[in-house]
Length: 526
Image (cartoon, rainbow, N blue to C red; front, top):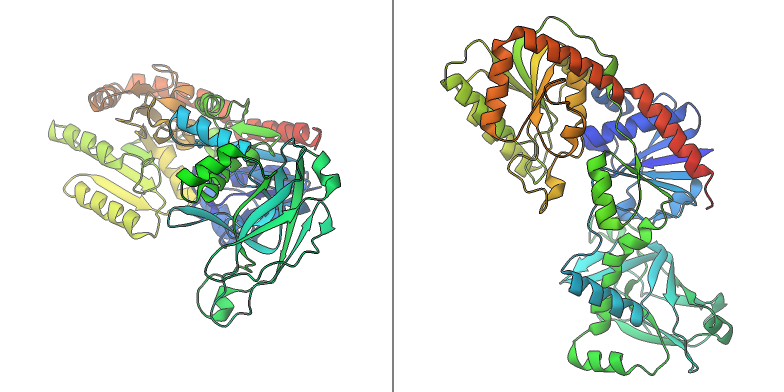
């Protein structure tokens, strides 16, 4: 039995990618497993950085964002472990692992409701197969087909003859052959002569729907297109095999006063409403997933709020849960990727707090910041600014080091800091808080006492005063840290509590829960 596990951010090798790889390792002892990402990442690099054994796993390179999801049909089970994306899938059974849910439709409640009403009222088509992820051009959402595309189009209840309307553009590079298509509706080849497709403008095509198709709630419309590759033509680096560009597709009975009125009042009303399929397609893709797993109870609550779906709690595995504790040095450790963005690890705030402790008289202690890096200029600039901010204080920054070195730091550091979500409003931007916090548990397993922010996923890990301390202000962070620095007996007691608590998140617990989840999903109706 074959299982495909996809993570679009696999090359970053962060916490979510650690979960993905651990999932692949666990399942590979019972199933044939492919670990899939959009970029080549050496197996040895994954194993060294995040401490997994992928000897039985086939690591593949597929970019689902640049191709149709038909490859998912090869698997008996498809697992999407990509943060921030409800990917389309054509597999019969699917699991979605969620770190934090995305909002499916934007805007106010009234605006969302109106969009959804009009989209369904005028019966616009949904992509089923063969369309690449949507492209945005001048505020409009467009879809490229490959050589074959399949749309599902709902039908109105009507005594009038029904027709399928769609707009198609036959864009081609200068040296490519003109675009040509064939259409099939309800399984029947369209015999009517189709107009020549313009490379510059959308052609509007209207095809009668076969009588036997009008008895159904929806029909399938298939597009067969000659293709070209922009990269081969030398005009682009785009290596996709592109067919034609789809603007919109809908069914009509020819008698729609509301649609007629809107078309007079709103330019390009059909294109604007078809655009809603990009917003609503997340909901459609979500319906393909029989099982949703949440990384924490915090995430579960927001899944219920955003998606109105139940989810299974599947805490991540923590390597250090079988880790060792050793003689501690006067080190405060923090582990988290160095990047600029809304979910960053608040390194500057931690540096400021430590500097203020030093300025107030703290001596003999060091702050060590550890994390992976990103090559983009914005993230490199963030890292350089951080290095400059640390000058003159006993603060070290270690980047892209192997997990064995991180494990050594866990074992020898006395305190662990975590600040993601500091000064953020959970009710307004809940995605900016820590969804769980694997590094915190790894540190705890090695007897490193956590002093972490009292928000979101962190409060599911720490028992305040028993296995660490929680804080909400930088003054609290400094106060708790100084208490532990001055009271070695308290520090030892909380370290023991941290080790005990970390065992609740061990890899063995994770593996058992993953296997149960997979078995349960495979037993569900396709």
